[in-house]
Image (cartoon, rainbow, N blue to C red; front, side, top):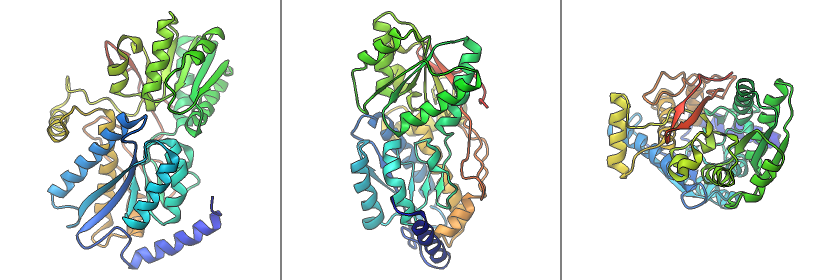
Length: 386
């Protein structure tokens, strides 16, 4: 990790140059944006729709003439959810491709490994799929986040579940990395607010497929509520193992497991699972006319139905487009940051929150909602939790 004073000096230099010179990744007719996704690893089922959602929004912008006449070009590198590969990907996008900004990098381990490189290089680090506190704090001109942080929304969700269901022995199954530890902090904070402590906890290594020993440990501890700091595949594995052994304990998964793939892969085993929702799933059944039209455009472009990760990919790209448009024809890092710090969005077709950024607050949304898998699909069951 480089000293913060060096980062600050480099940043001031970058922003001052950006005000009067062409920023990297910006030419007369193009804006290059980089993204590090998982297209081949354990969360590729999330990375591919995120990429496709971003591509569709950029293609929509380009079809409308681009941003002040510049076409948007998305350069995606596959890191396979591997921090070491992600560092190489970030270096390529910075040095060889000279992207203007990084958008929606996927996965907390990947983000923790690459975010320092990105901001040191003077590139905006925008809306990573990692609701980790460090993606927006301490306040930094180049770091922006739109997803409610793990600690905040898991504290609220845990407190709400315990209050409403009367659990007394809450437990945690978590991925043994920054993602899991952030969730743990939120769960512990929520339990503290209701006068309880975490009864039992057990971890697994990233990419693990057999969670039988962890589930057995939690069951032996007498847990009556289990929080899952898992992603899709591990969420299904944990619930399937519990149900196979006849253990019907209530489980709550973070937004990282809130995906249509969870019930598509898990079937009856995941029925009743609770999850924290970022926005409603874009199911075609019951969709508004605007959302239905978007679903059909997505399906025609990519040959598959969109899911919530597709919608989030489209949303993060839309925030980039809105800020770039407001930055004006003389796009620079400084003008882009200034525009984003004054961006307040309206309601969108997906039913997501309104995002608000300012010079003093680079986190666009702080709250999540609860959902539950009922009859094979996610249904929202609460308003935003505070």
